[in-house]
Length: 111
Image 1 (cartoon, rainbow, N blue to C red):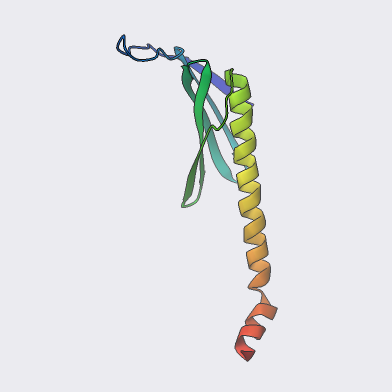
Image 2 (cartoon, rainbow, N blue to C red; image 1 turned 45 degrees about the vertical axis):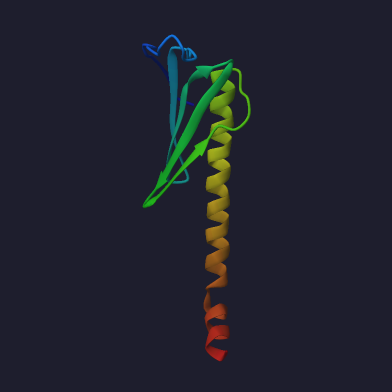
């Protein structure tokens, strides 16, 4: 797992919640998909982040749900969600291809 921590200057106004001054990024490939997990910072003791998934002309963004109190747990959660979504999409695609095979075509021709 390759994770980069990037320091950034926090410059919100005095009225706004102060985020933790770091971001984390984790990039990987899974089953031909490019996945980028980004932790955007921390506010009120909870981590905010998302995962961007890209394959061909398909693109999807997953957001962090639930409370994660450290960046590692948030990255792990988004990593698992991204892999699960990819596995589900591939399983549905395989099922769809089986249903459109020669038998399905013959059934449609007889109808």
